[in-house]
Length: 165
Image (cartoon, rainbow, N blue to C red; front, side, top):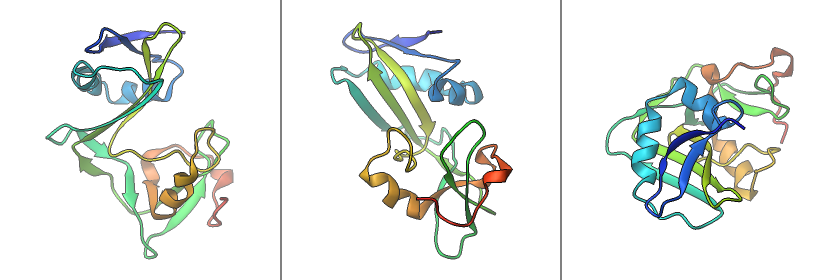
């Protein structure tokens, strides 16, 4: 695994991201300015749990979130993003919105260091239904939220108006 060291936590745990294979790595390749913000946030924390969710208000707009609240007036559809096997919920004719929030998901490794497995601009959102990390909250959340249609490259043959979950 290719490990890019991001920093060290307050209690000396190494923080790293797999820039090639992880969701966090793919996101950070498009938003590299977030690496310094992640370092800033995690350097002040004592990390101890195996799975850690960090949701931090940075006090200023740090980028745009691609997840928006939807209503019955929105034009919603479902599709599988490229290289995915589950369907995501999308909304047409909406734009990303500015956000001061940074979400970071960490997993402790066998050496008691932490891998940043996912990160994004915006508030925490549960995985989509059907994802291996989906929870009971996933279905309820994604009934009222969607990705802005241009947020992901989709497999056109999977587009449907019928909710698959």
